[in-house]
Image (cartoon, rainbow, N blue to C red; front, side):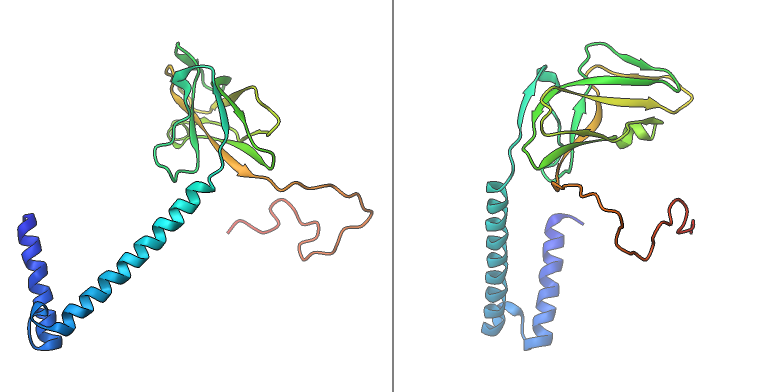
Length: 202
């Protein structure tokens, strides 16, 4: 079915609804025309509300200063609403990771993270599915040096990281600034001191 046929079928359905509700096609009844205009106006109002919300969100978007040690290492985010920025390996050569080995990879990225936030390093699903894991890492707001990521090859095969390959994700996370207060007794809780495996497996 081509585009024109789809439109004609849709109009036929609308006419059928008009005949059932008004006894005539929608276009021939003033009440139906008013109903359509009202529905269209409501849609326009909803669109305007969303536009204003999006503009307000953009104005409030936090900015993080970034210094690139290589232009090829610019953090990558495919979609604007994605949580993380992909970090690349800052290397012109391939990096070979043998089974069971751990490597530390420079990313060519330095950040000035605002106080009250921190950077969370996460793995990428593509690498993880190949048995190459990235342990979670933390980038404190006071650290402005080059970010490195750690990769562990848990597979039985050698994994080769290509030059400038995306190897991890960086997420900027709000931080609750807390102060530790030493006490002799903690408040009672339902769980108390029950720890590892106390909730069962299923």
